[in-house]
Length: 260
Image (cartoon, rainbow, N blue to C red):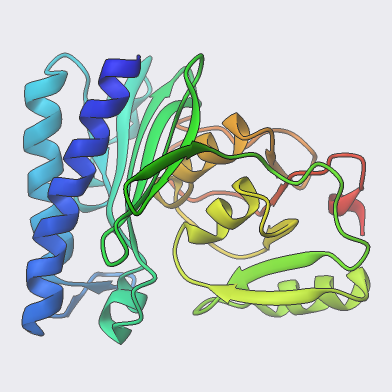
């Protein structure tokens, strides 16, 4: 598992380099999918790098990427293990050129994310985790373990989406009371919780399974929780739709975040 994790870290960096070439050129080639979400040359370049790399590393394990999401459930439901990939998470942030986008690669087994990498191309920061191995953040050449904040702040730090703040989240924050709100793009919101810089990330809006799988493993291996509104862990590949239900990400489970 440790060797595989390091190989996936290198693959994420390779995909990040492909993204940065396009990011720095300014020629994004922006198109739109059927759901009106943006698609750039960088999404496709990273997808191609990752799929080719995974095929070399683990040819026996199928791959589901955001850019190959048309695989029918009839085929997917037979998978006990597969790679779930978002080649460029935070395409809107990429287009805005604010640096808040990531490469997400997760290994799913029996519906659970068991190994993952979340890589930030602009900063070179790398988050990685695997069951039985641990969870790490690598920044400026230094690799260290991270952990959620187990005792949340009296005035909790809440991280919210920079581009997708829903009315439901605004209502929830009103009920929560005093808090500090930090806006952030992509799966970096999860990572702030994982490293103890935020107490809570409420996601009361649409996400897809590739948006969350890699970052969920980071949070859980750091001692945190990613749960749906019935308090159960978020799981994968159990239905035809690849949309997630609403969920909460937090470190301190003694507070009843879901029931506020």
